[in-house]
Image (cartoon, rainbow, N blue to C red; front, side, top):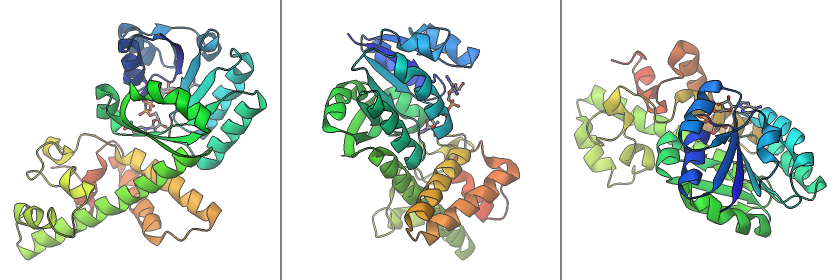
Length: 296
Ligand code: NAD
């Protein structure tokens, strides 16, 4: 049994912490939101009154927070106070620069650290089927791997500090672009009188095949589990897709990478969010491309 501090018990952090409790660890958690704290308590986490209180006896501290500024602020508070050798893991999706700054802060305190963002959404967090993309030293990864495995089904060491965040934004840029491509194909098929099922049957086994089509099809019918069959309830909300596409664009600007389709995807999701659809699943972009974004 390991004592694990868990800071940020929201939609993702709450069920992730619950899985660590189920795996037999002592989990001591903190969140600013009383609702998140109540749920975590019901799931077996010992909830305390501050981030600092959560880490006092921890062997491992995990953060799962909205953005880089939150992570840097919490790490600034906790790092000087943890036990020597405590492993610090950030599972939030944040910009690569902030991730590298966080690692540098940990290094100054002689603490091992890992950036380990996830893919798989709330369903993956609940079912312990997340994919973790990790950046940090071999030693930090070796210590984190068994714990991350209790919250996910795949844990990939992507490289040094920040490499997990880099993998996450590259992957999600592919996802945003490919969803728009698949949605455009269905919109064109509709105009041409081709049925959704016929396009799916061909493209899902031909060169148009991709995850946005075969696992997350943006029209109801061909993939019964996709959010399109559930009035586009997320799943993965369009607001979070926009967040990740913006992170990718900022990283592209900083690094000099040329990503014109990533830029276009970010603009389309910004328009879609701006019209009030950020709470819908990101596959609902198909309604926007039809020229009628309201979910029918
Ligand atoms: P959320 O808003 O539900 O949870 C974040 C929690 O952090 C909130 O409960 C908030 O009260 C808490 N918080 C904020 N500042 C805090 C502080 N200083 N101290 C303690 N708690 C604090 O968000 P989420 O959906 O759980 O996402 C968390 C992270 O995971 C984000 O970085 C997000 O991009 C990423 N992510 C989310 C999904 C998803 O499908 N929701 C998928 C993959 C990755």
